[in-house]
Image 1: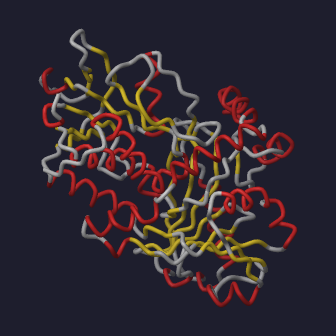
Image 2 (image 1 turned 45 degrees about the vertical axis):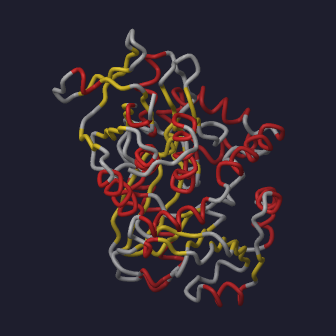
Length: 410
């Protein structure tokens, strides 16, 4: 079947789904991108904008078993688990701890490194192609530590970066101030990765992707997909909230890129993923963009500080709390307090809070490709905090697997 004769539905218009829809349309497929919300309004809206291919170390690292109980139950910890959610989280947590075995960590790191390869240059090219080159800023990432002892706790992760070809420079206090003069006294040791980059408005980036998609003839539908079912002729039927003719809801291929909500569509089909929501928070200061000039990571607290177009964004924390619990404003308040303690020039600036759901697998490796035993069903799920970094390579993998490597630009 020619690509133009293939009808494809992509469910989820975050950065991953939007990128997939664009890549498929470039190859000539007839593509419908479906989301109940405005494109980019979910997890993609609130991320920290970091393009971080050097993040090859999974979240579950050796030694996590000894530190996890304290981290999960400490409300100030970067990794937090509300007690009422503990019973539901136990199956995922068991897989998470098992993923920290050294052999499995090495395998996860290799898979992540392969997925990240070339991401920086591809995002720079895509931003230029979409007419938003100003959103791409390549000034490196600066990771900060209070002292050498704190740095030593992350030594394994830095060794992995070096192993996979991401060099870095260690800085003293003067070196930190030469790059970022507003960093507070707490931080005395820096690790600078010069070739990393930042998208300074992830929401606008996704919107540009979708405009590029529709300009090429792609179709955007604001609708909620409630279920999917295979048809006898090999196609797939979507059950949606909107009243749509049955033929309009029949597709040759369906790509599920619905983030943390993907299990609601996949579980009834017998496609079971160990997917959990990493609830992430940010505060965005109204102003203060000049506080830092690049992505700055307060590594001891797992907090990302980013100069966004509309102000300074301070994001982080992993909260294992499911999809239904309301946001916990105390988690965002911790971010705001730490930011004000670290950067004195934020005094007097107001901050807005946000919470979103990062889709996370226990081993930090997303599931990308055809669903086993379900012809025509494709998965692009579980990117955790690296969905922005890996969106283009995920899209290329799906498009090439479905349609072949040849690019056809309508």
